[in-house]
Length: 165
View 1 (cartoon, rainbow, N blue to C red):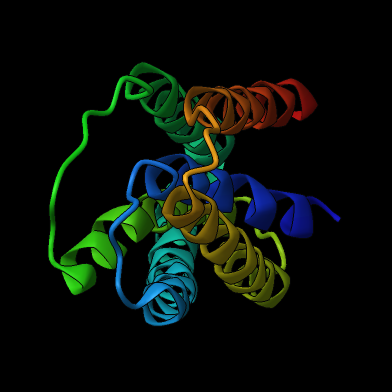
View 2 (view 1 turned 180 degrees about the vertical axis):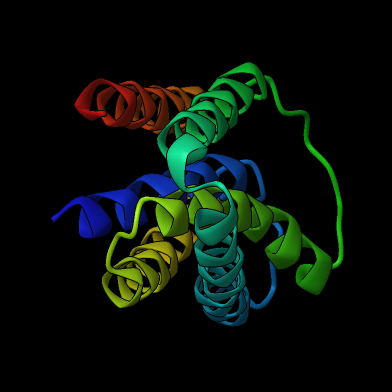
């Protein structure tokens, strides 16, 4: 269950970003590309997280909690995005990079990687497509609450993980 919820959390940051972009011509392609990257980066992150777990077995909960805390804090602090123009591929990569660092923490916690990867990809595709469609349709939804929810959720998971230790 943590994995599915975590997949949803990492997709909220993409929603916040994509709500700001109203002139994307290939909404489906961007959503699909971002979803694939939201699954690829966690595979790399889980692999690195498992490797780090072998090296830092006694420190893994503290390190992963710290990573999640600071990633959540960064998401909250970045809630003041300006409008910008980036090529579609670079935009998908930029929107997906945070899943790499989050998945390192989850790999260190030995969470079920395939559930998280599938959840992150599915949630990201659905929510990013909806966000891009809403931005194109001119529906005004502020992106800041999504960043706050994602950031606070990651911080909460980090504190809970540290508390369970």
